[in-house]
Length: 149
Image (cartoon, rainbow, N blue to C red; front, side, top):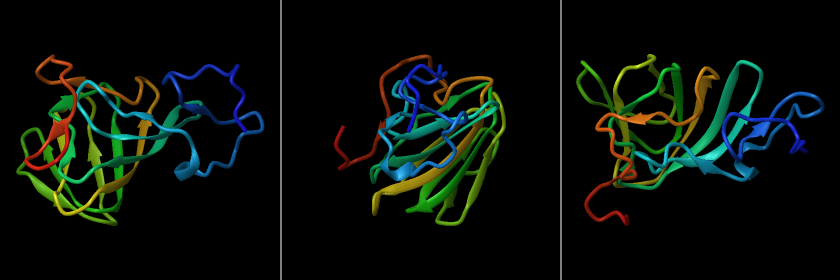
């Protein structure tokens, strides 16, 4: 149970603490994880210093290049992502892979076309769950050939 009077940084997120300690992330109502640049959608829970969520990206879709002032960890639960991190070669991350994105570093993640991706995300609360598109344009997420957009 979540007390609606508890303030969250992310509109629609759930607040942990004061009796709210256990969460079934897959069953919570979801929010966009960066609608200006990403197709990620899922539940977000905020603590005192950190926020976490269980996010979904449909096959062939994902996040265009973006950054945020808070550091981020993604743990791939299902599916495979193409991961682009500024200054690094693109890599493929599958189930069991932990990905680290430093603060203010441009990055992008796209689900491969074969299947949807589910990932667990953790960020500090110095900023909300969403970041800022690298091109400054809020044109939505990445949709690859054959994916619906």
